[in-house]
Image 1 (cartoon, rainbow, N blue to C red):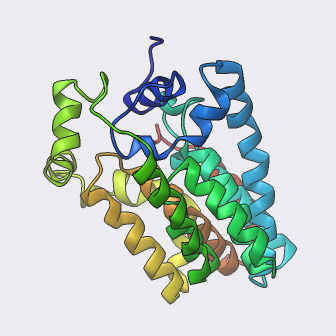
Image 2: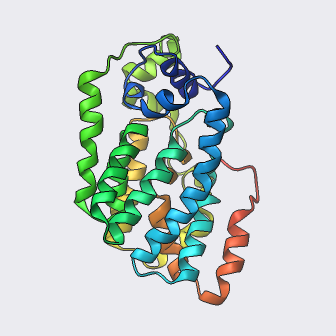
Length: 273
């Protein structure tokens, strides 16, 4: 087997037709499409960036944002360290492609194309099972939750078992005791600004004009940390679109370009995991 991070190694096993541990067995679409062809994984990863940026602009326009604010929101989003992700998920990973398809689903909902939105959110759910929840929050519509039918069906028809990667003692403990493992992993991090706040960069401007949508999305995004050992990648993949659009909306128009530039560069080694 190639040298991958734990998550990527499980997708690589799934691509070879081997059963993997839950919830990885629900994320079947990319392993099925890309197989163990690294060039295809790189192609999906590379294509995800323009899809994410363009989808964010269209989604933001559907919420009533101006072209300038929409473009700034897209730039802020793709520059987030958690969206870039750690080396271990490039290119064999599902977060970025799922987010790219998910934001297009949200854009369809906000632009009056609910049927296409449902199709895309089901597709996104086959890449990563939690996407319907985030799309529902991004588009602020419960209709996106229809996409949860995909992981429900997959859970019934797809076999899962403790694979060779998950069987490693540390990963097996995380698999068997997710809450305990998460609390242990995040001990001392909950009030550490470099982990929990600073990675948002200019996105923190969203707090100048919080909305119920912002509170709900950010609250649930951080709530994931109770059952997972990842940090920045999880909460930014989930709440990134809403936070970045809200931030772009409160930055004065003549400051937007400067805000994007300041946000896009890393002033210290970023936390991406």
